[in-house]
Amino acid sequence: MSSRSVQHLHSINVQDEYGTPKELFQNICKKHDIYPQIDICASHTNHVLPNYITKEQNCFDHSITKDFFMNPPYSQVSEFMEFAYLQHKTNNVSCLILTYSKTDTIWWHKFVEGKSKVHFIKGRIRFLDEWGIPTSNVAPYPSCWIVFRKNRHEK
Image 1 (tube, rainbow, N blue to C red):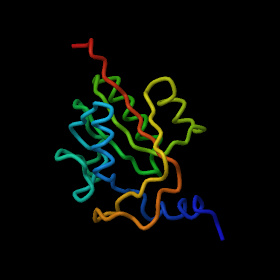
Image 2 (cartoon, helix red, strand yellow; image 1 turned 120 degrees about the vertical axis):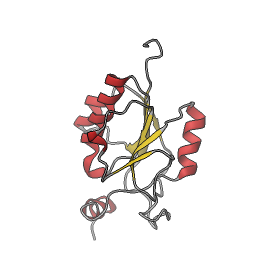
Image 3 (cartoon, helix red, strand yellow; image 1 turned 180 degrees about the horizontal axis):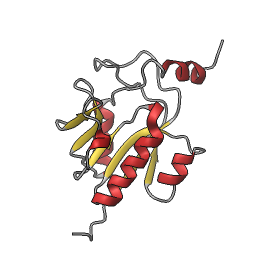
Image 4 (cartoon, rainbow, N blue to C red; image 1 turned 180 degrees about the vertical axis):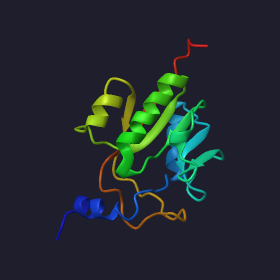
């Protein structure tokens, strides 16, 4: 029998876009006083904000000029982290990211370490499926919130 991580890696070839539980999202926003205006990795059923960008609308084709939230697909975390960091720096926006905490990866050291605030989540998250229903299994990896804060002194 293979480990949960190996099983998960196999399953992301089929589906690796999971919704963020709204209560989890609302709690972190309130706790850390960050209120994104647009969800850039959403679907019509799993968005946590009224304004959102779907996979079909492709956030990479947009310049994000409002504070944003993203819960990127596991299979593309590196690309999404680079995109989020560049939007934050280029457009002076705050960004709240929910992702797995893989501190040994290149993307972590290029776009997170020393550039953001990280809040590790105790336990494993039970994400939502494509219909907004909690999945039967918890996440195979620990998760964290990554926060890029805008520079308040820029105009």
